[in-house]
Image: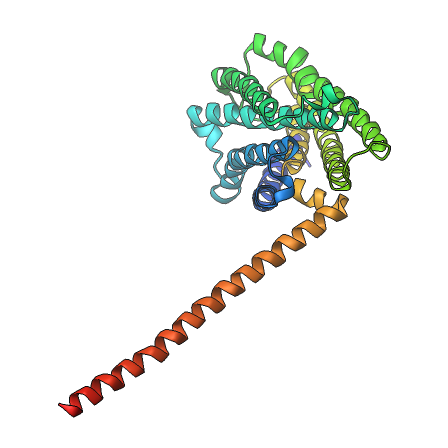
Length: 340
């Protein structure tokens, strides 16, 4: 197999990976995030709790991220055309909104675990920081930080020849991405925050047993802590390989016939797809890790099913009642006519 045929084969495999994972992540991710939004907003136990608010906000951000990322990948597989290589504006919009939604989800995960540390702390003054007011404030901060980076990516995104295509080619921006954005803002800082506050929250939850608090509140704190901890583990597991490959891609020359750069794009597509799997499986992870959450979901589905059945039976009863009333009226009218 010649060098050119190897490069062409790797590009075909890369397109197939993008299409398969894109379709999978879009379908599975939409079901996962919409299900989580419905459950957390309808169950009374989760209402008006900052941790649930963060999880719902992250789910909305995940939906936006998956739509922007996966729609382009699916169009490549179906139409055999990459919109980001044809339209500069779509390249800029996709790159910009990917960073807005991606960073927003990342920051929300960090704020979620910080809030869980606040809510489970034994000190009353620290527990007072876990409020909806602080949650709204942290969400605004996450939106501002992610939007500012989205604008930067929109400005500097450009289309060059394959294999990298739509990417960042500005020298100063590449230095910023290489020395701060990927290693610090998207990697070291979130991992450090999530790991530190995860351990602190786990320690707080173990102390909850000794505190005089209602059993219902204690179980809710333990449940939310376990759910958020598995979310952090998933983020690190799926996110770290992509960050490493992204740093490698930024330092590889953009050469059309370079096998090294083609392999970098192939690995980037693989780990890029796995990264977005992290934003697609949160609901399933919560079902897997928390038996209490499974029971709550079953109870909600059962309640919803009974409500639908009750509505159907009510409609049937009304129809039968109307059918029974109509003949009586008709008979009365006939008897009236006959008497006349």
